[in-house]
Image (cartoon, rainbow, N blue to C red; front, side, top):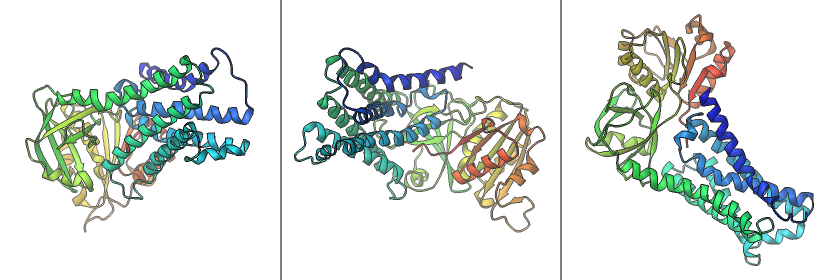
Length: 439
């Protein structure tokens, strides 16, 4: 209940900050109206600009703000609200061009006023941010260059659009009204930027970690084992994740999110299961013991500690077994005897990461395991193909409607499993999905 109220609190804060410019517009002398369409255009622009500055707050990883929802939900909202913002910001000039055709001259940056130039530059910067994010994979833009350009162009969009608003000055013609944009919304943007790029790295610099081991696993997966260097480390809940920085200082933008695969009950030892998929992950196997690393976290609510139940069903595909292993290992260390079911899909037997350990865990836990192979070996007597509603119906326990479900793996697998569970009467409120799509 407390967590839900905290979530509502942050939603109200977001709405209040988004609407704050409209409240201030009504303070003092009210400017004469300029027609419905012009005022609609301005209103859309104001709302878009207000939400634009709040985007930096959403991605600053404030634990107090992300904890009610999970950071994956916050990042998903960040992506979706970005589309709303670009719609509002684009609608602002388009409505003006239709209602007042002479305003199209503002697009000529060589003859237009500086107010119009700032608006054009801000719009172009924002369009670059949205376009590069939507089509990053199609244009094969690797994560690190994208993240750097995302931050730079997002910052420029904020600067130029604020300059445009203040330069026009129609509804920002007093010091008090300008303070709302420059101090309040500008302060939020600057504060979030300082927190992410200065304060948090300084905190991480004081709490380094060292690589203890890089252990190869099945399926081109490596368990990166870390230990705290000169401090007690961190507490985390099984299934949570951290942002890892290695080979660089915490001030670098080269960081990557990975889930814990180790037990939350083991102090001073942290394992991250990392699959070799290219870019950074292909270099993990070359990391030498003793290499310094930095962790930012923990984050996420993909954990049985947040969702109490008489039993749990885990559905994993590929490297999605990582956070689920953290929960299974933790359950073993806690001597948890609640019934557990693991349905684990993979291409073949050689791709079943942690296969041997999972079989051993069946002796320590009340755990039933179902392996599903797309390409089974000769003589395989287990399940084959994909995790279908029919397969789920065969293996889910009779009290399936009372349980919590944790799904982690490739996006198509998660979508198919969620749909299959719904067909069996399992509500989406009972399912928790980790999609590995924070960026």
